[in-house]
Image (cartoon, rainbow, N blue to C red; front, side):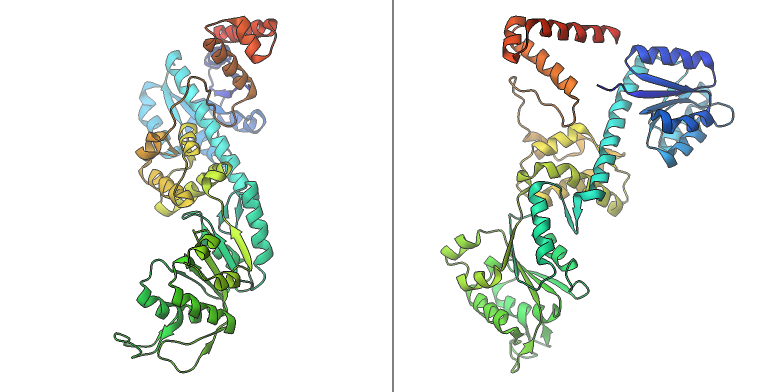
Length: 456
């Protein structure tokens, strides 16, 4: 496991040396600078995870260093302050982004705890920067987010179908992002400058749906006080999304089929038909063939719509996309609500990774939006997540070891060995047999773990 790197910035040689020796004894790799100017010149080369800096120094003091670092790096900064500078140090945390402050002389017990938390925080920020890079490099396709194999296949299909005017049928569970698929197709098509119109067939009363789709003339029925243009005409030269099309009444399905065949609509109460040039995308959360078998969906309409089918997988089948989605949503929703949130903790992310997401991406968005709104700082913690997610976390079995993705292999090995030893009641021979290693190798590993613990 790579040692965390700490840079100590202090113009007092004894203070620098004392802290360096203490931190090295705790397993940290250290570097030092005599003031803020030297620290700035060394930071790109030393690449510290954490900087511990005094406040009062010549040339460039601790607060000046903190402000300069903010523009060139996201290194975590801990301020060392004398009694008279505590108010300034608190302000440095609130206004300048310092991680913590410690009073001189430094309490080693408190320093050790703060450093441990700072290392975790630095690691989280590093992972989130990596996620942002992934989003920029390959995680976003139009309005869609994800880099899993199934999503890459969806992206390829969208690229192939977008330039055409072929009808598309998008299937998938509620909340998976079917409308996002439709909007992405529209925005990547030659029709992108024309209207995109979406209508949810399950949200409109049957008596009003025909008027919504095709429009009506003034006086064509009771309450028709003026002419109304329907969705087909509104989407002329553009794209029309008929969401939850399997909920459309059978009689209206027949009229829709005729419009698709003749490319003309007749408003209710009108004599003449109006030509329309519309690219139609339909979406449903039902199995289309099952809906046909049940008599809920016309087979001839299905074949007319089903030139290209895109199936959007549920979120539980692409768990590797959750981290990217979470970072994307944090960035978007923090801007929307003007909140300071930038990160999510390992613990909170693990809760999200273990949840089954019956509401798919829509549910994930709601969870992150709630967390962004109630989070008081930069990092979403487990306590910011809804209770129902935490209550549904699987209980950890004594037969299992749960480790976050990205845990170094050396630490994974240590956890497996120690937990297996615990399971066998400290029977080293049996432990070696289970792990399929020699007894000598096991003894060497345990000796190394003991020595590392003693050094700390």
